[in-house]
Image 1: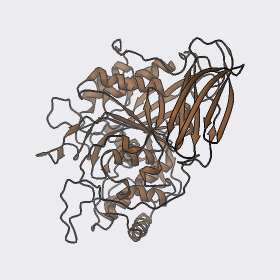
Image 2: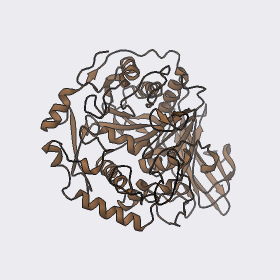
Image 3: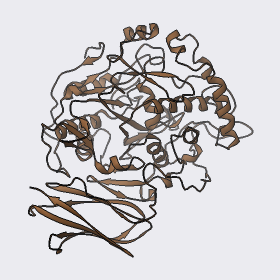
Image 4: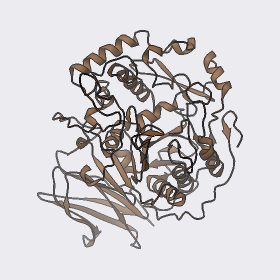
Length: 546
């Protein structure tokens, strides 16, 4: 495959072996003007969803593709009246940095699984009537920039991009680097500039186009793996949307502007070092764990404060429409190095984690990797910056995503896979923590009544929402909420008030729930759905149109 500027690969993917499951809604019309995320996901930006997969082995190509395909068909659907235009660019940021290789390479770097991404793209194409040329796979860590001396990602992603017909950023891009040094990248075509509201490090950041373009839908697909910052996940993966040299988040702050182009230096706050020092002192006073590690490298408390502030600058300047972690398999250690005889190790974790809020997604991701999220400074810094309300995973509503339906679950019902890291090793002040370790010591979470997003974790009263869509012609979603755990029942009645079907009848955890009604062959007309629980009963009307 040739490597050239903003490579556009043409081709048609062969997906005859991928069986398309039934959609929760009717088959989309290919002429629809808009598409939307699943309405429950849209209505609950504070929530995190976990889809359990059943891939037997990381080399199981068809199973991985099918996992992506079926998830796309459950997450996206068309609309004739509102949503995202079906002419939009779909900008995807996988974890696509540096070493890739194949499964037969002993020291292979780990990337977001290309087979899963292929299935996701094909699912969106089929469900929404999109063309492969609308998809853009992007990564800001460019070959030859001194930080990424070689990039084997094209060995895996290049053929996949050809099959789906997507654009793939060129990694062999000396011209882009030269233009970046001169500050002459073409606005809109090569770079999207975004101001940073209340930035600590940056006043402005450049993004690899079309990330953050006005006509782009941005999807962040991170990999479930460990790193020096803990578990990398969506917040860290998103730094790879930046152009060179903005993308170099892991270097020491003392080198931030050293030898950099004047155009870059102009986008950096002149007092960034003082700001980071003040925030670091504030967080040490608040006893943020491990923030007392001495030194001025990135792997010190002060250096990690700087990394966190860069990361939060990036999130505050961006529009991430969907944050996702591909965890069909995960890896501990750091790239190829790790605690298993000097090497990393992969584990079949079989989860895909997603939501609208990247901080919440990452908090749950850290918990699933066996770590205690309250021990990570990034999440505390996010609260300071007003980008989060909690560091406690128990305060984030978590749903099991099963066949396109979110089911409220306790975190304890999900399996955890310990992924070891070298994050801020406690090897100072007489401590002798191993280089590879778990950050799983007990953290005392404060009691909070903060409201997350547009709803509380546990609502103060019962609620029966209007079904969506309404009118509908096949299936519809019904959301309801309980202020506390208890028995609840959801019934469907016809226009005469006769019971047609019972959708749910049993014990429920407190919080939001959703159920789908498949109308089957029932006749066009008015129906009612009724929510019955202790001391509460409410009905709403809906219209079935064939």
